[in-house]
Length: 460
Image (cartoon, rainbow, N blue to C red; front, side, top):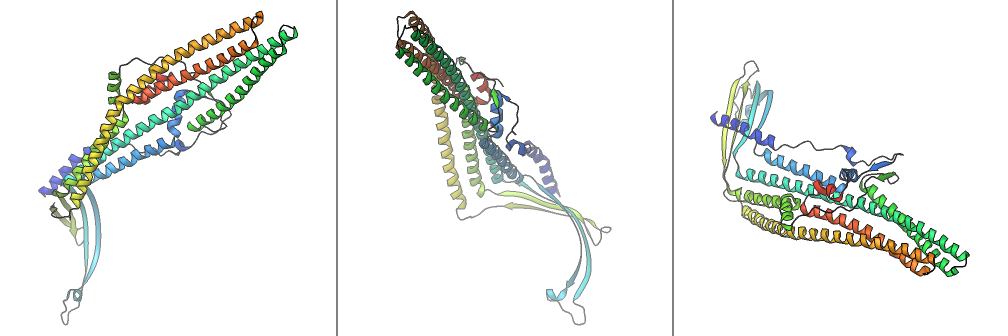
């Protein structure tokens, strides 16, 4: 009875451990897998909305989320091996014995005895008191659960970057389309100018033809830009779970905003605290060490207690309390070197995980340094592109004035138009590249979830 009470006390000690390890019920709502139904109204989509939708509908994020639930289930299963199991039974039976089946026959006496009624109501408990292998398995599953959770957060970051990149590409393509419309309007105005000057006898017909060629080039560019924008919008709609025919507008117009200044050492410190691949590598190393401990614990003795208490008698009214208690010590003696083989394999996995962690930790500083260099170079490129675009527009204005004054031909005007087109494209591309460089910096810092919108200038 003292051993049984000790086992029951173990129940009280282990229940808080079980409660602390419980997780919330997995979200199995099928709505999270169903894309948004087509509506006639135009959906207003901010960058934050697009990211939220992408996380909801992205298949990789959904599958990795389910991996978290599988890891949690494995941990609970490992925990169950350390928690006492309690069960109850109620049994009422009637039995007739055949003495001949036991080898007893007596002349003149019947071989059948009975019937014997029996009532048995019992509560049984089986509890491990000392099991080092089960403890090591629990540590392994807990570490593995943390690794899978870190992988899930890393997948979330990848989805955020992918959806954010598509959103920014659509914004950039829309800016290109606006620029092409402006260039088309300028080309039409210049065609009209040269046509009027040709009608007045001030310029030759060739001058009009040159401007008409520029106009047709602008129209061709408009067609290509509109097509590219339409395809990009389809890609974004698919990524955020919208129907292909669903109309939507982007509410964010991302502009150039400088990245916050930080040193390499400061960035490395932040990355060390937040990088999910580093957290996952650390957790996997801990899981491998726990698995190694589990393999070594195969040779350790274990102790468990089993007991039951209940009522036993011919009937329920006449039943009396009975109990049984048993303590079992299991001592492995020889397992054919299976334990040594498992320990050697587990030790090899530990060395692999140590190498992986060292590689991730070493690459962290390189990633952060490269991201900071990209941000700095992209910011400088924006300044150069902005200046080049302003100069190209001034050149076009002066070329128009020189043509009107009759001191320049349309060749100079055409060159100025091409310079404006090139300068505008360079500026749009540089702003986009700078925004992507800031997003890559957030990824290198491990702060995509918390800092992406703030860095790129989008609204939540």
